[in-house]
Image 1 (spheres, helix red, strand yellow):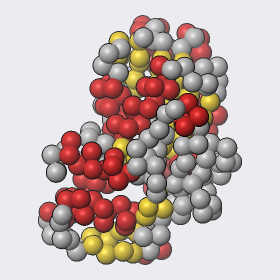
Image 2 (cartoon, helix red, strand yellow; image 1 turned 135 degrees about the vertical axis):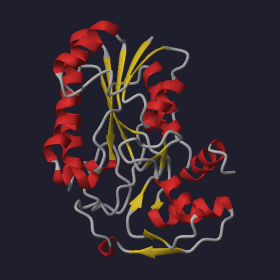
Image 3 (cartoon, one colour; image 1 turned 90 degrees about the horizontal axis):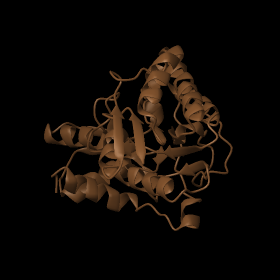
Image 4 (cartoon, helix red, strand yellow; image 1 turned 45 degrees about the vertical axis):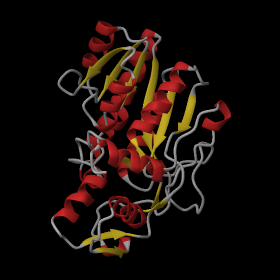
Length: 284
């Protein structure tokens, strides 16, 4: 099976390249393919003729999306449209990575694949538009994830939340983290593993949630990081309203992987995933 991966040097793309080592992997970075250009996309797909296209390339700076909505839609929507149309022309399966930010956060229980999206910021709106465009490929998987952390770190964000907190703790900074935003922290390696199984086992096309199970606030997540490291830190909870943010955030965006268990697939709890991550990064 030939797998073409866009954003191959990103946080999730890096793990896909490792997880699919037993396949014929074509790792493409921004230097290799410009997803906002149909010519570039068609050229790359025609050259490699993949069986599966995994599109991880995205504009992920949530606040910057408010300032540059045209860039957000060009990458997160038009880019997906280009890849979907080129994949359809080849008869390739498209895997598009989406986000918990397609939801408004007004629920008090985790969002399932059956819940109706209602994004409240430009990033979420652009990602939802990308979901609609992904459906231009008859063979598509839309995979929603939440609050990713991975070994490679997010290139667009300059790292990941876990490493940022560790860096702050090492420098003896006072650390403040919001305690009123609820998430499903997700290890990219776990998501990559389950997506590989979805593809290999030929699950029905459609939308799947692939987040680590359980949920917590960003403050609770940070507290767990230091608890596992057995560090004493100056960690303090704050409210979202105390921050100056351009984009609104959903207050509760935890995801439930309702469909995966139906196919005997599961994701580990976020506690276990965090421990594995810290171990693999040699923090434990």
